[in-house]
Every structure is written in structure tokens, then in C-alpha cells.
Amino acid sequence: MAAPSGASGPAAATPGQPQARHGVRIFLIWLVASAICDPLIWFVAGPHMPPGAMSSSAVSQRFDITVLAVMSAPVVLGVFIYFGYALVVWRQRDGDQEDGPPIHGNARVCATWVAVSFALVLGVFAFGMVQLVVPAGAGAGEGPAPIWKPGGGAPLQVQVIAQQWIFTYRYPQYGGMETPQLVLPQGQNVQFNVTSLDVVHSFWAYQLGVKSDANPGVNNIAYTRPERLGRFHVECAELCGMLHGAMTGNGYVVTAARFQSWAASSQARLAPVTKTLPPYAATYDPTVIPQLGKALTSLGINGAGGGFYGPQVPAQP
Amino acid sequence: MSLPARVATLLVAFAAVTAGIVFVVIHYLLAGLPVEDFTSVASAGPGGVRQVSVTMQTDAQTTVTNTPDWVSYFVKNPQTGTWDHTTLLKVPAAALVKVTILGYDGCTPLRNQVWGRVTGTVGNVEYVNGKPVSVLNSWQECSVQHTFAIPALGLNVPIAAVKSPNLCSTSPCTSGPHTVVTFSFRTPATPGVFVWQCRIPCAGGFLDGNGGPMSTLGYMAGELQVAS
Image (cartoon, rainbow over all chains, first blue to last red; front, side, top):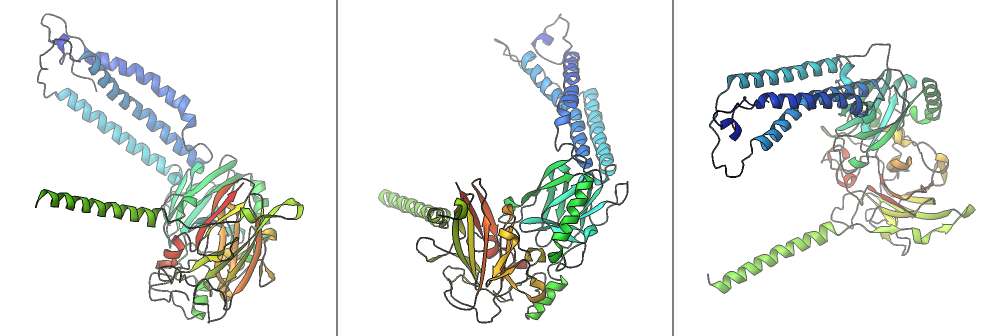
């Protein structure tokens, strides 16, 4: 923020000499620096901002990060330019024992400071809201009843099942097959139904710009549309136990034709185990999975309140 | 208090603190699990491919530790033939690992039945008491006790359960009803460390079956160290 013109300093304090217009100087330096930095950020750094352009949500997030960088750069420059200007121009010179003049109260500076800060914060708030709504949640988990849904037809349903310490993926539109492989078609909306079988995890497909908490008993829905072919990284983003660091993997975006081929072959290959799985459900509760309950009941074991094995259960059933 | 008494008190306190630190370092930080090294016993198999035989057992208890009611794996030492309480294995790269698991534990259903499918082994099959099996349905007949899974290698092997109430009660088990599960898998050509684990939440007495032996190396999780 610009200092009041002629506010202080040895040069300004000399009677009979014209006061230096520090505020104008600082403003001009700031204006030139901002005019150089912002285009550099937008045109040079922007295309390389994370998380990339592999999906609609990733593109949206990269745009957000670039816009925020362009907005914040002039603020950062203003602080550092004022700091540098003060060090150079208002430094204590040799033989100068005089204290600076006591300055207090400048309504114009205060009003400008408050107005600019308010405008910036309000602008960021409005921008953030728009960027959350328009890209259908921006790749974040929206809970079991999302209010922002993408247009363009029925999405591919992929259930993300987190468990210690791996993700598996269930495709209800392909016979309910479940596989540790995550394969997605290019150009089609995808609805991730994220849940957990045990503790709290978080599904983070970095290059897709998708991140959604995986809670047991909850279906946390996130949307995206893969745009570019290739491999993306998946990991758990919630500390979930001893091997949390090993809860990583890869997913793949392939062409629609290749996806259909993969889905058909996987469905056939996984058929023997698919028929042993429970019917597709939005969530899993380890205490009430019907088939599991039957197996436990046949052994005379009842699920403990809130737990699979409570302390009252023998150490080894 | 006299000066010598104060000095003595100070020295005793210093010695006590130092002893405590040394105790913690030795007993908790440096006392790691032994690594069963199978690289030195590798032999040349068909086609010159190195191969090793690994024998393990699953027990319903760990009476050799201060947590006797925890389930655990044991590994047969390739040099001495004794059963060691560890889950750290060192095997050669680009080798065929022939695994035999003696399952001394009773059944616990899989939480996710998808892990009833055998994957990552040679032929995607395991042999239970000599019979080839590709899927075990733990929800239909509670036929699984634990699993041996290495996610990074795509390996998943459900261990068939003992269907007898008279389980071995002292570990490592040397007698008693048990299943014999055998399978083979190939190690990658590139050295590395691959974690392995049981996928059944089999920690009795812990909420949701997690924690305890499911969250401690040396029991239901370990490392496969692939060496060049």
C-alpha cells in the first residue's frame, strides 16, 4: 500500500526542498511489476499449474489456481515493493541521529486499505462459489445427495470402496464387478460413489482433480469427466493406519472403445467372484453385511455394538 | 545438603535418565524384527530361473510374545528350520517363490468377499490340501481364516480355514489340525520393498477387527524385500 506522500525521511524533512512523491513512485513501480508478473503467471506458469488438464475438474482447479495466483501476485508485490522502497529510501543515513516524525491517522489510507481488502475478499468469495457450482462440485465429494450435477447424459457409475489398505472399484452398470483396477472412458461423465468398509479414508485421484472422503456407511459422491488419455495417480489422503503410506495405485483413462472392451473382458474374468459378492449397494456397514452376518451367525458370533468384534468377543472365533 | 551429597544426587539422577534413554533406544527403537533371508538358499530351477521355498504358518495366538491372544504369522527359518516370529522376508529378484502356508487358525469371514479370489499367483490358482482353488467363498461356508496379499504385485491368496474346534493353542504350532495352502509367484526383476498383509480384519478384541495384530509388523502384516 502506498505511503502518504512526503510522510517522512531525511529528504522530506529538509525545509525549503520539494517533498519527494513517494506514494506515486511506489505506485508506479508496483504497477510496472504487476503488469510484468501477471501475464507471466497467466501465459507462462498457468499451463503448468497443478493438477493438470486430464479431466474437467482438473482443468477447473488449474484455472482457479491460476486466477488466484494472478490476483495475489499484485498484493505480494505491493508488500515487497513497499518493504524494499522503505529500506532503500528511508534507511538511516550516516550521522543521522534524528528520530522519525510521529505519524498517526490517515483516513484516506485507511479507507483505501479497507476497501481494497474488502473487494479482494468479496471477489475471491464470489469467484470460489461460481467455480464450485459451475463444474459440478469441482471434483470434491458432495455427500450422498449432490446438488450440483453435471449435464450431458447419465454418468458412468464407479463405486470406490476403501479398505485397509487398498481401493477397489465396483462398476454397477457392468454386472456389479469389483476390481482393484480403475479404468475410465475418455469424454464421459463419471460419478464416483466413495465409501469405506472399515475406517475413514480419502480417495484422491490427483491428476483427475478428484478428492472425496471415504467414510464407512456414507456414499460421498464426486463428479468428473476424463478428457485426456493416460495414467493418473490414486492415493489415500487420510491417515488410516500402519500401511496408509502404501495405499496408493494408478488409474487409467482410455478410449471409449477400449473401455468397453476392458469392461466386457473383466466382467467375464471376474464372474466367479462377482457372484459371491453382495448385491450392489451405495454403502457398506461391516456389522450388517447380510452374507457376513449369516456366516457369523452360523458360528454363533454376533456383531458387537458398533463393531465387528467387540471386546466381549473371544480373541479368536 | 552438603556439596558432595548434591553432586552425588545429580550424578545418580543423570545416570538414571541416561539408563532410561538407553533402555528405550535398545528395546523399542533398535529391537527390530529378524529378516528371514532366502536369497542365500535360492536354487536354479527350470530355465535357470532362481527359485526359493518359503514356509509360513498362521496361528490363532502368539504365545511367544507378551500379546498371546494376537493372531500371527510365523516363518520357518531357511537356515535352521526353526519357526521365527517375524513377517520380514528377503527373496531374490526375478525369482520364483514357492510358498507353503500351514493354516492353524479357524475361520473368519472376509469383510470384502472380493478377496476370496486368488490373483497374482502362477496360474492364478492356489492349492488347498493339494486341490486347485481359484475362489474361496468365505460368506457361504466361512472357509477362510486369513489372506496373504501383496497389493503392489497384485497377489492375493486366501488361506483356507481349519474346520475343527480343537485348534492348536501354543505357538508356533507343531501339531494339530491345519490346512496346507501352496502357491507360487514371481518376484519383480527390480529390487524393492513390498508390503504384504492379511485382508481379513482378524484382530479379535479390537474395534471392527482392526488394530493390534492387524496394525503391527510381525503379526498380520510384513514386508517382502526383493534383493538383486
